[in-house]
Image 1 (cartoon, each protein chain N blue to C red):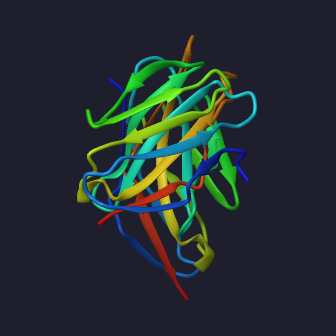
Image 2: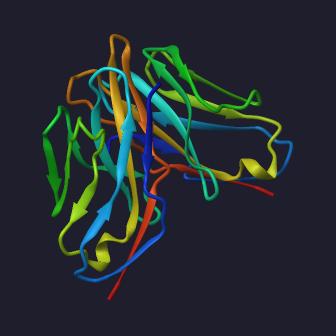
Image 3: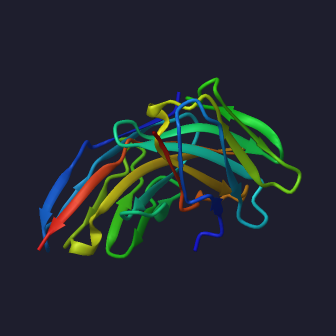
Length: 114
Length: 113
């Protein structure tokens, strides 16, 4: 089947610390992988994505590399800011002839303290 | 702005009642998804529609139902409400392109008293 497993939170870091949130997946075929972010009081929004193996998605200083050999898509940022405090969701997408199917991880809450 | 509109933003009702949540997808998107987000359960997939037809079902209770209309908007109906149904309900839409992603609305917060 298809599923996403991500690191349990919550995670608390000091400003300028290095961030890693682990994500591994199980999928049939060749899924696309995504990280979504949910800021307090808002809906989820796309942070970055990768559509094939070895692709690196990046946005706002965050990066994640699609590793087929380890079925992973870990999220990293070199220096977090207070404004990065949010819940981060890893997700995979299967493309079907009748639309897309998405599978989400449980979310990892990140709090960055000054 | 994701282009996905959900109404109402907030709803307070009593146990046993019925409510309808509405979603307008992004222009041109044929797929609509409904998710429930509660503190203890995370983001739970409920149901997916594609161009008016049900395509996938997740952990949707029998008391809940949904439909997608010819103009592609969707409604999620929740009946015989229980305290545990209090949650954020998100609608999302996607297209069918290879780079397609999910676009989420801001959610409808349901409180059952």
